[in-house]
Length: 457
Image (tube, rainbow, N blue to C red):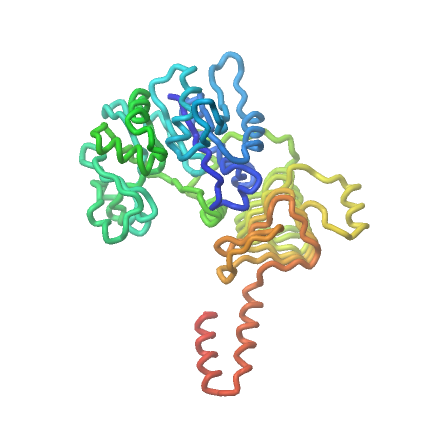
């Protein structure tokens, strides 16, 4: 197999994390990058020839891959980045997933391969691709699609495949309405149906026979997307398309909300995604950093990156990346702090404190950070409050953005002492209750007080 990892487009749903980096280069769990997941799955599966296809902000991704995935002269493995390029035969950038692969095929022809494995660069899961290949060969499939069983509640957000008893896929629909779902069930195990999983969703992971992929590109030259065009066309023209059933943890990290939830879920006692699995190790650059140092600090459900310095802080259900500094009487809760790419020296920190003009790297004293993502290399002064919540509307400023109630402080931002973004729940409640006393009509005031009390409960 040769693997092609799709880096995605501009990553607008992950903005502002994708403002200065491509989607596969977005940091994960304070230590890795999103692209490390499919690459590590490949390496753990014995697939050591990979291309990563990108189009936007690929510099940091290039640097990360070059720094991490070096193969010696006795190994024919590689991880190469293929950025979209204009040629004399094609002046267009990538128009979709299938078009990206079509334009990149010229680079694959320099290698010997029978199968093409196509992966997404923004998913969190652990899979042995040799099992996918074994199933593909055993069933005589020309195309195999990795699928995951889902409930009716989740089915409307996916491409749903209708599988026959022999595992062959004969129908496909993209994000069906609830009214259409009864016609799209697939024969699944009793264990899956018992928990309400009657539908098969495409994971966006495809295995093609080499000649099948080339023939489909020839037959449908205008098809730019695998899920919307190539796969449905292959089914309609009677290619052997089979489902590979995957029933383990998998999540798509396509939005700020899903990114936040997938990261913080890893702080659970026994998370569904196992970071400590020797058979499914996640590779990333080795860091020559000291261990994390904690003084008078309370940690609960926390992941703390190497080289971090925590002084008198409270960290609750949070992820702190490499070189994170948090000072005394500061709370970080339900948040991701991505850390820093370098340290400031003690002299530099002392000079900054004397000037009192801007904070040093990290989070200062007496701060409250909640429901927030602090991107890399941010400097947050003392007495800063950053509190996200569902009451906040989406906004975009030079320093921060708000998406789905989550506050994202942009990479390299400096927030001076006393900055407030969002409000604590207690303050919101006090403001709402205070408003109930401005009405002179007692009946109106009483009714409003009852309604507000119900909302606060």
